[in-house]
Image (tube, rainbow, N blue to C red; front, side, top):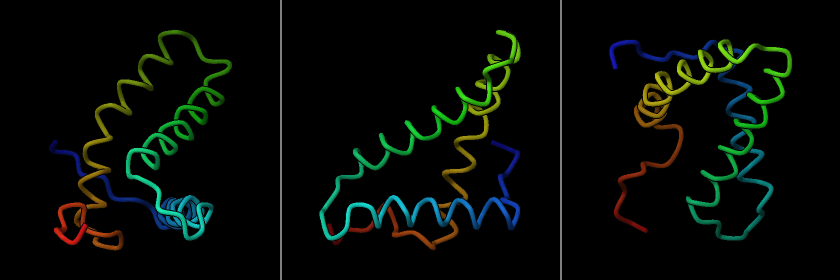
Length: 92
């Protein structure tokens, strides 16, 4: 993807707190990455659905297409940011 995602300071702070909140909610329990990804996708989907309550079908479709186009760059940004554990580490 040519458009690289770079979060604003505000969105970065909110995202970081949200991620920490998800991690802290499970306490000392070991939670699989699949469960965390599923939870994050449910949160994202609920947010999108609630924000589109008054949108037209065409507007909703455009929003989803935009999200699908941006998601790979969001993931790559966080891989390079290194404030989260390296997903390719070999210690697990």
